[in-house]
Length: 207
Image 1 (tube, one colour):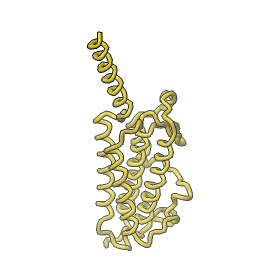
Image 2 (spheres, helix red, strand yellow; image 1 turned 180 degrees about the horizontal axis):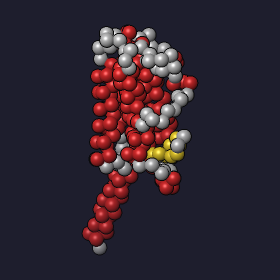
Image 3 (spheres, rainbow, N blue to C red; image 1 turned 45 degrees about the horizontal axis):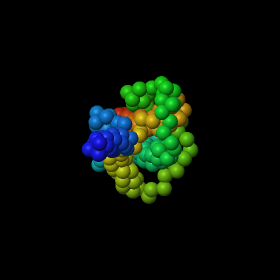
Image 4 (cartoon, rainbow, N blue to C red; image 1 turned 60 degrees about the horizontal axis):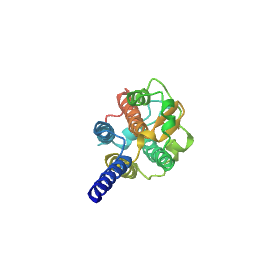
């Protein structure tokens, strides 16, 4: 009787600890985690490559008075990087809301395609306007961007939080926190495209 009771106790303990481990683990699959990390790393690499070696004349060139320069595009990227991640952090402080998952109408791929699509123009909010940046030069902004993106990559690599059941309201609808990380990456790529558009303008300085 004692052996049977002890055996049941051990079995119960294993079940409980197993369940506890499941509850603490991220709901992300290895594939999801790898995909998010690839998106964050690749867009970082592409942005830095796009800015490398540009002169002040090239950084400040505008195709027209109402268009952003490369410097302004990058300042917006960096301002947004911090603001969007703050929004994610705030959402993760709230309780998970699995009951709201049915209200998410977009897939992970939809998020990326939607944000990266430059055929649909969106006016940014005032706090994210390049004019709100207080860096003295592009080098300071680069330091800020690299630090922020390194932090975000570290989070995506190591988090065990329940990203899929933390829901965030965006103007076009609700997304989960994992999709929001993809949103951050896609947003930077959207404006990387804008930087490349500036470079392709016929009047862009040669040096």
